[in-house]
Image (cartoon, rainbow, N blue to C red; front, side, top):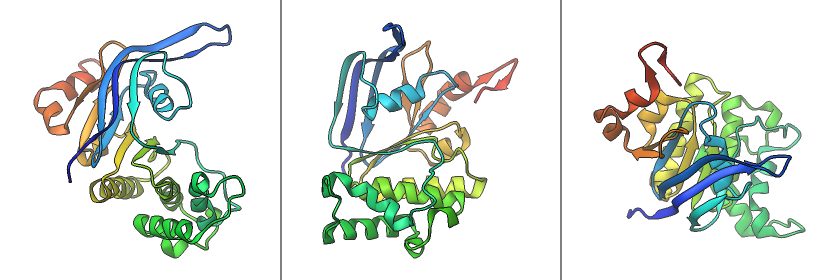
Length: 241
């Protein structure tokens, strides 16, 4: 499958407006490409601007400057634990079809098909009638991924999707996202602090801090060049992420 640059940024300036109408610039110049058919993991220390970048890409906040081109829509999974215990898994995933169903939200056969296929893709079709409150943390996160998948967008962006999960569930989610990316050609961007799983399962890493431009490469390239050690380790403090 031929890869395509789905998101392209040139000299992108990100930040936000303060309550006093001042501008807080988090990063003044970012250049990157997000490719279809790849899992890209965004890594960096707290305060590096990862969440600001994610919100900018998802349209929650506006860029402060530079160029940002996005082809197609974005399915988004945020870091907060979902509070939808009163919904069934099927009902939750159906919310991903809101763009197609319009104001009144009437589901048609193609919507139901997209929902069923999304549940099958993440491996929880057997839980479709269960309430969200009955699921494990890993199953809830799979349901949230299914909701994003049901939107049928070429891009899925996830902010700390494994933050609340145990080790086994973290690996399951990363394998799921890798499979969705490779088999369906999705461009998957994951903001994470889980360096080990990012290196193991990510096709590409974005290393972000406030001092340098965003550095991009495959885990093998960044490891061979010593960039990973330089970025994440300190002689005095050890691992920094």
